[in-house]
Length: 336
Ligand code: ASN
Ligand code: ZN
Ligand code: CA
Image 1 (cartoon, rainbow, N blue to C red):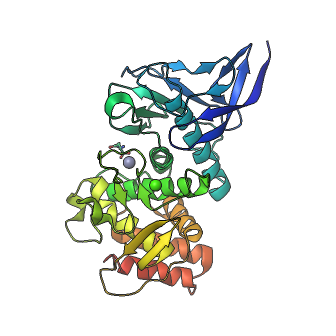
Image 2 (cartoon, rainbow, N blue to C red; image 1 turned 30 degrees about the horizontal axis):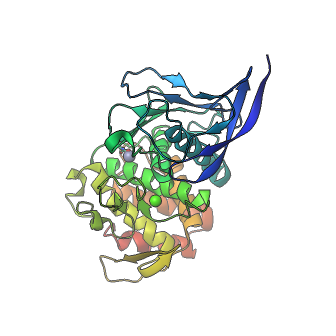
């Protein structure tokens, strides 16, 4: 029986028509990516048990319709999940030289159609797997690229700094997922995912078309912190993350008004300074090195400042513009 790596076509919900690597087993194609650690996409068919579910298969290697359906046979959510895993794998490999979430060449797996109208997506260290709900009406799956990158980045954090998921370290954990989820979206650079500093702008989770989170000015979501204060660690981790998301935006793009890929931003500073960004590529390198080399499970905001300064010093030197901008961007979010 012939088993081979194939190139299929997926009609996704959020990312247009995409190329998927699949596996031919006998005369059936499996949604298994042999080129990226063997990532597999499974169907929970609206169930919630801990089992993986049923591996998606197809007769002609053309997957999905581009329109999500509540049918348990729907392949479209699986296309988005498989594409998200593919781009996240490629982002980590080509940006940081990281081979998978554990850097051991082995892929996680993904499960879609989890539960009934389940409005969330989550990473789980115990199964080493990603799970996506179908959202409201079972027709708004939480499978957009930034969400996929966000969730799988929780696995990277677990396997590196291990930031505890509460208090300030929890906010740093969440921000790490927003930072790299955004990195994944910019990396994809397909016509549907040009990249922005918004999180979840495609999944319409609020029902009015607004994103879940805004990195240029996190308080635009109504709950997130723009800058550090002594009580920030008491906020939900998806709100205390605002301080680091704002730091990352300022470090990348600088303060003030700016339009990128057609999206307008206006990022304030808490200390009245002007910050000039060093670009997203360098900011990503600094955050990744800080996460994987200097942060620990109990790192708080003051420690994140130290960790990113150490990373900037190691990468660019302690007298570099990059180092000085890390200091200025933290000061601009009141982390001194
Ligand atoms: N989607 C959520 C997140 O990644 C799931 C959770 O609350 N852990 O943060
Ligand atoms: Zn998260
Ligand atoms: Ca986004």
